[in-house]
Image 1 (tube, rainbow, N blue to C red):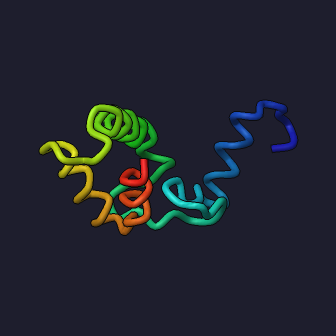
Image 2: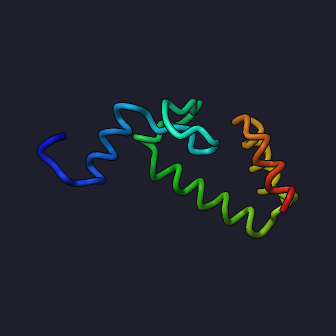
Image 3: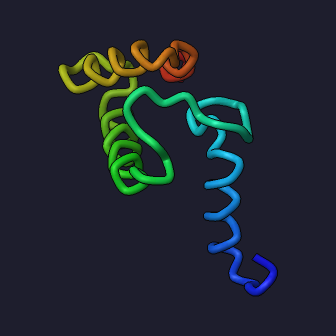
Length: 90
């Protein structure tokens, strides 16, 4: 790593070595506890899921439509109940 000044390369290596942290919570470092995905290998898929979630929330902030209810279920499955409360709060 001493041979480069490329910040992106350094950040990728750092993520490989130390883990990605908790991208859905407040924890900033360490290994994320994903049940289905690995941030290092599934970053494009996770970005697509994030974008889709933002779209659902912008159109259905109370998560009442079928897609909103599916997102609500996923948040509960991934133990992100605090996210549901945040969305309900406005």
